[in-house]
Figure 1 (cartoon, each protein chain N blue to C red):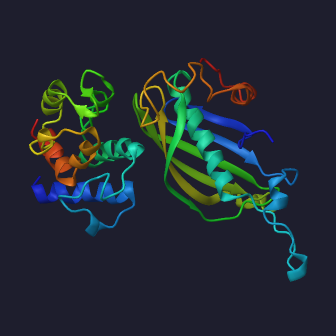
Figure 2: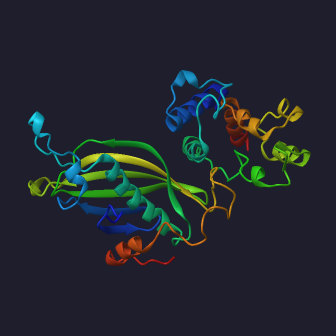
Figure 3: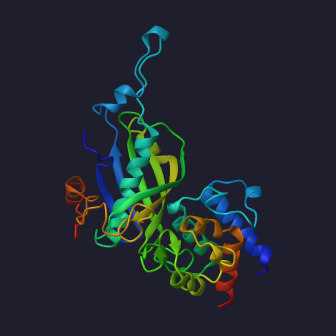
Length: 127
Length: 179
């Protein structure tokens, strides 16, 4: 499957799950900030990606559910070095380069972009 | 008013499908407010079951199916109405039939597909005819707090979702409550 084909399917999933227009779903669009995703939508997106691509996604594989609730990984509203390392190893599809300089928890949501989902699917399909 | 919007579970295939029925009765208070007569405009009363309550009936049907799948261990919360289409009015005297199927279920939650049909007892030969479809998402609250707080916080340990009313409904429908 080409990257464009993956993008097309991911876009369909997001249009369906978030009731957004196709042209809103650009590569750099953040799921939360730009497309209005709420917490429960992430579960919906996981289910719909599984359906669209025919693979299983384990809890915490796509979004960092458990990391953000662990006090070891969060201190004073920022992700600790331990937390960053964990995020990096568990979520290789997320680009943490700029975030690492000032890892405020509140800014983490913005990293979950449409491109991140496409990278995630690409990684899963290669396995 | 008891918050039960189905009368009986008539079919249950564990983890797959549940069928429930609801008889719409003019004795239900809400039908007298939805919609009352407007005498000054010369409009007679028009009792129809609100769409939101039809959705609730489907949510209860699908919720029982999802809860039953794990022995009612989880707190099954309706998290999202992904899609809903209602094509006919449910008026007093009709029977609604909810057929819910599980599309996906895991530790975090479940998504369900649902079909709504109506039996008009004034036209029994037509049988149940389509009246809409509803796709729902449920969250297992203990496993997917979804911003509602940290595990163990804010929500009691006992299963407040499947309370006495649900247990009675299941018992009178012949469905074993194992939770």
